[in-house]
Length: 481
Ligand SMILES: *Cc1c(COP(=O)(O)O)cnc(C)c1O
Image (cartoon, rainbow, N blue to C red; front, side):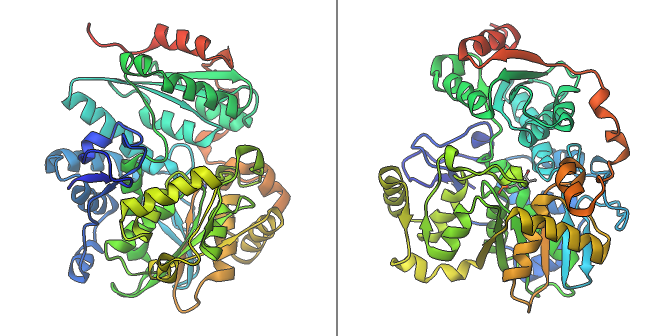
């Protein structure tokens, strides 16, 4: 299995080569040269597998160069139920990704946020941590991870990389601008390989520092700086497993069609659904839900893709979806244009020149229905009303992002098929919106009680690339030479 760039001008690589890298050298994103296919007979065999075995079956098709014993060990260590202990009492399942039905057989929620930071990003990030450590050991090298976070991705990354050999993490966050709970999730980690840097400024300032340091090729290669961003292919591959696991729990008979609804931002999660569908999983609809930042909804309704600038991005009550330039979208468009990298490059040139492209009058748009996407956008009012109505009707508390998925599914799903909404975070992380919706604060899983009071480990620095650079130089992992 090789990976090729969507822009067609970069050398082909293997899974373990692209694992530690970002964009391809031509500015494109790596995609598999083909999608592994699972027949109905294969799906029937997979239907009875526990999550780890399912993950092994899927990932071994994407990374055949990893010896099977090694991959089996990595997924078993990553995907056992004890690592995802915070499931709803109503399912009380000792499984990694349990399904909670609201309307049995018709409408349900796939619990993906039972990991250490109570968000779905944990599940893929935990695998990434294990894979990084494995590949770095194989190659006898090391990695300094540099990133900026507004809260959720950074904490999932830190919890996945903590205590790992050959890896050090430098995570920049905006000082004083995260919730006390988010701060505690990151800053209370005492692991020596985790460095929290609070930047005096906003998230964008922290992001600018990361970009400035990443642009310095000499510094980057001297310190072996890497990232754990949302375009990482291994994260996408790990997310493909969610859809198989959800499917087998949801359908009465393997082969029956069903739909998934996905709260979306960077288009990573739902891209994995698209890939699962391309691999033969009988998904009827992929229901894409956005919040007020509706760039992707606009595309799927009109064929116009018009990313917004960061100062045009709304701050909403589903903050992890406050994204107006979906970094993984290019991977889907590559399939949409028939995997023609020249056509894709033309579109991205238009995007750079005009700030948008329009597929409406192209043959690509006429045939786009075959990918099963439908979409909708939600608002704060809709979010709060949905959290309230799901609580009243089913006594199930959902987080604001999941509420966007539920609302849009209620509006656009084809009622012939069962729908499963992917739960992307737990309500405990977003107490204010939950309080507004139902009049009480969401309960926290026991280990999170009072984490705000735990001792914190964080260094405050100005929003200055030189200051951060000096800090990294003083604390980075280095080779033996
Ligand atoms: C990251 C995130 C999303 C968006 O997922 P994408 O893969 O970026 O589309 C939705 N909800 C929550 C809670 C998230 O953390």
